Length: 298
Image (cartoon, rainbow, N blue to C red):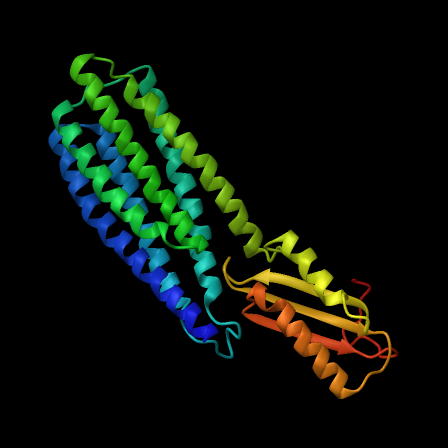
C-alpha cells in the first residue's frame, strides 16, 4: 500500500513534467516566429531562454521517469536520486539563463529599443496563458524536481507579465527603457528563489539531514524507552527530497529477551509511522556488545 502510493505520486510527477515539456516546446517555436515578426530582440532573447527551459524540462522528465525504475544490484536504493540530479541540473541551468538575461538587459538601459508594440501585446497574452497553464500543471507536485521546474515556468509567466505591462505603456508613452528595467527586476526575483531551492537541493545531494527538527523528534522517540541506554550511528537522509531513509544503532541497558526486543521494535514501528520513511534500519546492541561499526560517533 505504501509503495503503491509513492509509485502513484511519481507517475503523477512524470505526467505533470511531460505536460510542461510539450507546452514549452510548442510555445518556444511560436515565440521564435513571433519575435521575428515583431522585430523584438527582447522576445527573441526570451525564446532562446525558453529553448533552454525546454531542454531542461525534457532532461528532468527523462530523469524523473528513470527514478521510477525498481532497485537492482547497481542501485540498491532504486533510481529516486536521479530525480534529485535533475533538480540540481535544472537549477544550475536556470541560474545560468537568468545571469545571461541580466547581461542582455542591463546594456539596454543606456540604449533601449522600440519593438512592434501590438505584436508584443498579443504574444504576451498568449505567453501568460500557455506558461501559466504549464505552471499550474506542475503546482500540484511536491518533488524538488517539480519545484525547480515550476520556477522555470514562473519566470516565464512573470517575464510575459512584464512584456504585457510594457507593451500597454508603450502604446501611450515611448518609454522603451521600461522593458529592460522590468526584465531585470523579475529576473532578480526569480534568481533569488531559485538559488534558495538550489541550496536545498545541493544539501540533499550531499546527504545533509533533510529536516533538523524531525531529526530531534526521531531521536527523542528512539531514546524514550527505559530499555535504551544510548543511540549512535543515527542518520536521516533523503533520496530525492521526498523519500527519506533512517538508520540507527540502539544500545540497550541490559540483555533482554527476544520477546522484549520484538515488543520494543513494534513500539518503535508505531511511533515512527508518522514520519513515513521509505527505508528504516534499526540495529540493537546488548549491554556488553561492541559496536560492529567501530567509531566515536554518537
